[in-house]
Image (tube, rainbow, N blue to C red; front, side):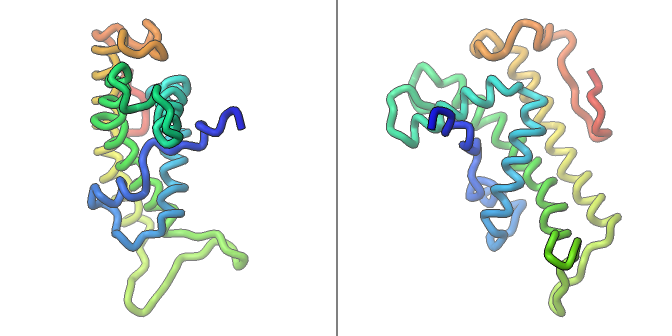
Length: 180
């Protein structure tokens, strides 16, 4: 397939678990679904589809053993962006998504909450509090990405000059509103 690279996740479920926010026994399929939402919806708003797809292509090339890949010296700026900036943003946004995904399930009986004698279900306010908690980290990571890309936009052909002027950088806050 021509666009197989578009299925590449920028981080793995293992990487999410390594950050210590998600229990090791959480199903990788659930984490993968949350990563895909975080990457294709939320991260795209911050860095743009072209930049995401270029990094996906570089990761895909590494997996396939091609020379032009994320570890190639000429692609060092993309590797730095991925490892130092995009990964934390994706990990924390994945945690936000997992709050919802793991709390409520769509089954053949409708929308359900899991219940067990050894665990207590979460209230809506507790769920909201936890999502807000992780959103703080997400927004901090988004602001770091914006700062980094503003200062280094010449290293990324996918980021055009209108991304920011470095005096008016995109800002992300806990309100869910763009404050730029």
